[in-house]
Every structure is written in C-alpha cells, then in structure tokens.
Image (cartoon, rainbow, N blue to C red; front, side, top):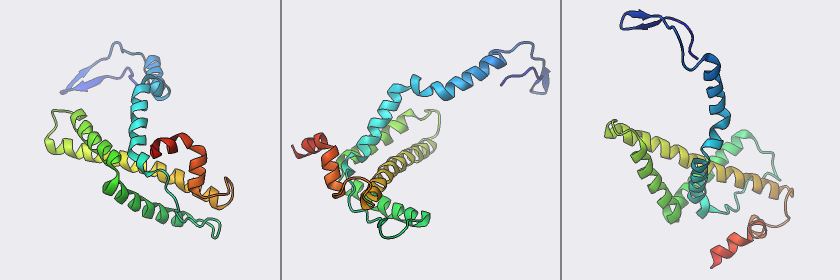
Length: 182
C-alpha cells in the first residue's frame, strides 16, 4: 500500500507529493482481487475445469481401492500411504492406456511453454513449464483419488448405497454410461 514516505533511488531521495491510487483505493483493489477474481475470470476457470476433467475422465470410476474402513479405523498415515499407492497406480494407468489424458497433458505442456515469458532462457521456460504442468497433474489426480476414496469409505460403511462402487456409478451417471457404451 503506498504511503507518503520518501523514495530512495540511485542515491537520490525523492519526496512523494502525491500517490495514485490512494491508500483507500489500493486496498479496495486488493480486496477486489481476492473476492472478484473468479467472477472476472470465469472463462479461465471453465477452461481449467474442463482440462482437469479431461485429464482424469478416463479413470472414472476407480473401483476396489481396498480402504477397509469398515474393518479398521483409518489413520492419517494409512490414508497417506494408500493415497501414494493409488496415485502410483493411476499414473501408470494414465501413461499406459489413457489417450485423452496424455493428449491433454501434451497440450498443457505445449501451452504452458508458449505462455511463459519469451525473454527467459529455454532452460528456465522448460523448468517453469514442467513444474507448472506437474503441479496441475498432481492436483487433478489428487481430486479424483480423494473423491473416490470418500465414496469408497462411504460405501464400505453403508453410508450410501448398498451395492458396489460400479453400481453406484451406474445409478448416478447413467448418461455417462450410455455415452461410454456407444
């Protein structure tokens, strides 16, 4: 937030006689950035949501995660180790047979490289791209894994449905099932 403090630049002290925007307006901009960002960037959010969905759509549903939450109490360490195990399995599945997910990943790599600052070195641009894409990949996989772990735990404990996870998927996502079968 700008304040009326002297500015030191190249060993010269400048006195600030006015400020733009004012302190009040600057705080309003900061507040609007926090709470108005999603509204202003709805198309970006939609694009990101579609990309996340396409990244994981070939993995639906993840069945038989074997959480055994109805037999033993789940601890954080058990859940973390199970998450890592499932993440490894899902990653192998994506890279072995998921053409849609791989295509989205390649497009994301290319897009992120193009959108990095052109004045940076190729090594820096590649590093930024890889870190950015890997972060989004981990986030999208984490979302599906956590969602499926919650559904599986609820099924095991009889909180939803009384059939298998696939039967629940068929019941609630009939349209998706019809599209996949044809």
